[in-house]
Image 1 (cartoon, helix red, strand yellow):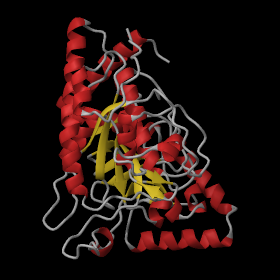
Image 2 (image 1 turned 30 degrees about the horizontal axis):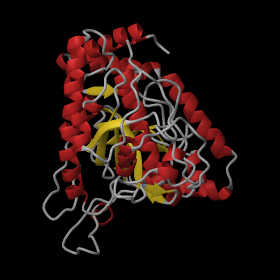
Image 3 (image 1 turned 120 degrees about the horizontal axis):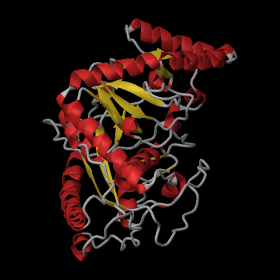
Image 4 (image 1 turned 90 degrees about the vertical axis):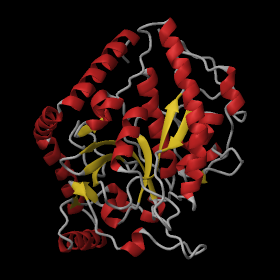
Length: 413
């Protein structure tokens, strides 16, 4: 763990690097290319792991992988597939995000409250910074949205890949976003409990955020805002029984959706490239949904892109036949992009024997996915962790009376 002064220095350096990238995208791309070359050896080693697993796989698994490879080849796709650990489990169990119908209207309503709460937090932050110059360790890099490539891991603001044990991807993505926000705002690395979220998280109206059979990340953000989260407890792969922790320490001050106006006759929309990049840089890694398939499940490297038919991507809502929606089934964490690849960089929750490294470090569990593939980005949402340097004024609770008073801040100086 870095000292506060080290974190301040690191944050300042990160901001400088990001600003430089804004004005010199060519240099950033060159650096990214060099980093990819350095990672080549590690990529080969990771591919070998998949090869070894496939060598000892059952005939049924080998046949399944062969069929997926044949499909990829027939479509002339460029990503690679192999025997990932995700293939040992049913896709219906791994991918159980359930986007609510009418998401566009729900998002618009939420964002009104989100902006009011965020404005109060920003005002409190500015006042603290005025009284205590050079004390905030929060990292802000909104200008990096103009860069040709960006990865939050390069600034040390993404926690490790985890491995969900049931259909609770909807809990892992928002918890990952919250952990990243805590790193960005407080310089603290935490390992929050997804199992606690599955057992306890509810919307403000009392509805469950989800179960091991599926859910949606909005309910997680609402619960972390209203009630809070706790440190890691084992994911048992069951719903469990909720035992609410009084004064749970991990709290969010605001959350909202990325701007995504629905197209005509659509119930929802996917944010534009520019809006997604801007939100990613302003708030940190985003919880987003995607349509996961068997090819997605077997992904081992390259830029993932499928050519799925319209009926699968944008089906008609059976309860409102004149309206369509974007079909998704899996929540993941969006942490960066690369324009040269025309792809987002995502962190999954299927363990480290799936995907690739994303060109950084030795840990797998990441994917490059084409900007326009598999409805990536639907329901994109941000969260802002409580900044431990200052308190929020009473006005905050007048706007959000459902929110329990925040725990005393651990003033970081």
